Image (cartoon, rainbow, N blue to C red; front, side):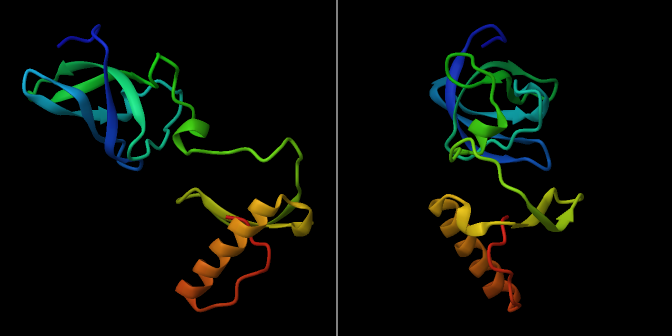
Length: 150
């Protein structure tokens, strides 16, 4: 294949921290069923986490080592891959909430917020937060704050 031909496939796996993974081609090309995906070739403007099973479109090329790689990776139809799409985010209205940052790790890009008004949040957000807090408490065997948002 070449960089101009467009192909489709699904993400087999992708390691966001390392910036690479593999895609399974919907239609194998010349005996090639998988290709390498690297962060720099994902069109989205940021290091998006590509979820297993995400449908994508791409060009193909062979690098100096002979590895078949993807290029110009987009969503089907050519749309860039936003973090919202890659993470499967579902927005729950336009209301904004405030809270207190309980803990944040810049190294791991993760933190916890205690909302000022937990019960004012959408019910599904309350439920998911409570479930995540319970899983965290089960793992650490420590008390977890009610309404902790992950």
